[in-house]
Length: 133
Image 1 (cartoon, helix red, strand yellow):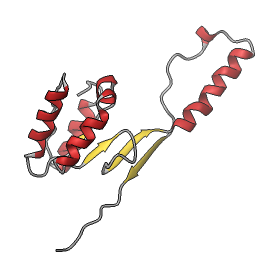
Image 2: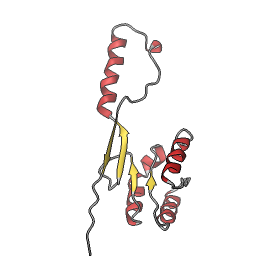
Image 3: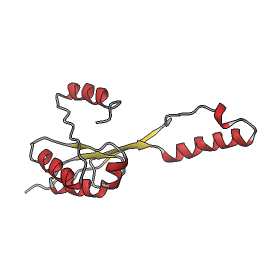
Image 4: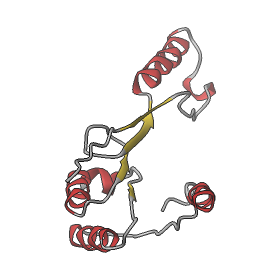
């Protein structure tokens, strides 16, 4: 788990009386084994943090979680997830135009703030459908 996320995840876990389990994987085979292991534990869920590796294997991870009936929270919507949370891309483009305008107006790019966090995020929670037997 990314170091900057771990403290917040553990604090939230304490509030909900759940355990954070970090599974580090380096290959597609390790992904499958980790998701299968997590899926075999009752009450488990998957939160997929975005990075290059998970983006590259995103579809495989989501499909493996679905096969294991593992609820998940992912960066992208419409992947069969229970919930998603991500930066508002439209807001990011809107904010980028401010930087472009400032540069075209004569400010030096090096004088502009180097890093800016998204000012808004988009989240969604999928409706779950249950069937009574």
